[in-house]
Image 1 (cartoon, rainbow, N blue to C red):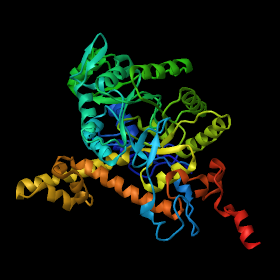
Image 2 (image 1 turned 45 degrees about the vertical axis):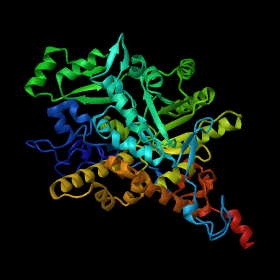
Image 3 (image 1 turned 120 degrees about the horizontal axis):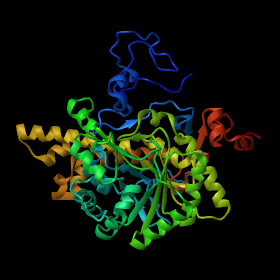
Image 4 (image 1 turned 180 degrees about the horizontal axis):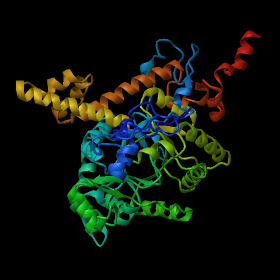
Length: 521
């Protein structure tokens, strides 16, 4: 059975004329005269443009490959006996009493009301357009928002002198929109890649904008190359080429300009460079960031081969990194090569199981194990529980990219529809928000006259987190674990032998064998 669905996908707006052959994905009968709605057919006309999910700037995309093990292959254990973290009293051990807060940082200094943070909201159009909703939503939810790579370099209004950024209105907007609503819980992380480091983004955001948490980026789960965006004008393509980005096709070539003017191509691509990890260089960069003024330094790595995961863990341990985010294959993106998203990298469950094994080895050596966050296709409360349990006690939080943006975008859309209705029919925005959102009255009581200044998308974000919180509290109460620190691997069972073999989690039919023998004699 094939795990993949080649040559057609909603992500690339392609399909096949008839049932496809399972391996190639080509129609079982490929017809001469067909206009070619499949990826191959579209590629015959638009070539490399078909590599990426469509339409750019309007969608996020997640892989559709069915991996042989994922979080659905595990179930959460429940019990009717006792309680951990609260008195075993039916009047006290109620699910609203479950503590879902967590701490990140080597010193535990980054306090979060809930154990999630956003994926990197970077330089893609969909990230830029939805930033305020995401940032404000994170701030009022007490979680972390991550500003991704290339923001300063992509800022058309950025002031760059001698190859270094001295001002970026877009980065200022990003930081300020979060800080306006920040109340001390959660935080904002700024991320940097090769181009960002060359531009001096770390120095700029730490020294000028007061950023305390800075993230070095090795990679992500959706791709194992640098970040990319699409550009809709020759002028923009030339500007970014001048800023030392890789731009394809080369906008300075007459033939590229002719192709664009004639409509043969409708866009250019901006690509980032591959990072080159080197151990001593990594330590030097971490120390440099701390000297510049970063209070916390974090690392984001992707679904690379197991040896690279070992490097990330060992280097992070040696450098005293404050958070290591590990992003598995199968997760989401604003723009990544579609086939790469599906066919490269280690899937999230497999990657987390390797992470657990390696963390356990480091701990046995007496080494520091940084707080771990897992990412890659996670969206609901059961995913959060399972991700924390599968590599307990090392996983402290979960990175959720597409799901929180979905909530923000839906909130924004309904806020826009409400605004149109109020403009047409009249009415009060605060009352409209209270009718529209289940958490509206709660937020109105909290923010008073500032309530209507909240972006509707931020309220949608908050409402989604509120749902996740109660859902997680219910799952944890059922497992009789009343704080995140009490969740462990024994709270899961594997539903298949393969999942048990991959993870070391007990197969469901073998669970509690010793306890059963003790009870039954």
